Image (cartoon, rainbow, N blue to C red; front, side):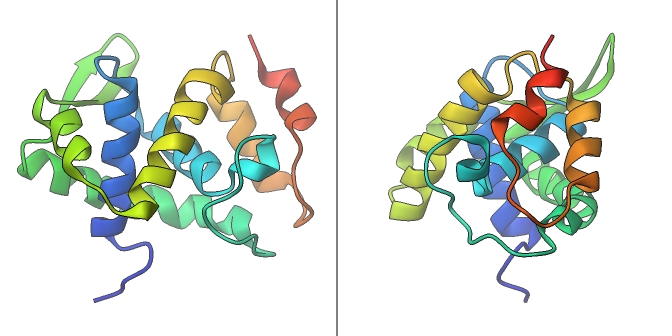
Length: 155
């Protein structure tokens, strides 16, 4: 089993993000961008990053989306998240059991993850145009991004 960026690891991160946004739903693009921001939060003037900066970190986004879909299926099968259609397309939402499950997780990594998820969902991503911000991340050279590079995508 691949321990890093496996569907199981990403499902925990996705559940933390969905629980933080509960009862609001998030689509796959939002979850992908939020997951990246949570892991590399320092690049976006947030708390210290959970994962180290890597030169090719923008390449994570393409791979992450595929594994994230698998991770969301794990959450749906476990009854911790649900998939639904809204006016914009398919969205994912934590079930009532999702936040309760996150509350029982006590590992230091999960506690730091929850802090960054709160920051990302309630402060960083507010009014960001997800598609434009994702394209900017993909086009950004390996140098650390700054918050100002995302100011143009705020609504």
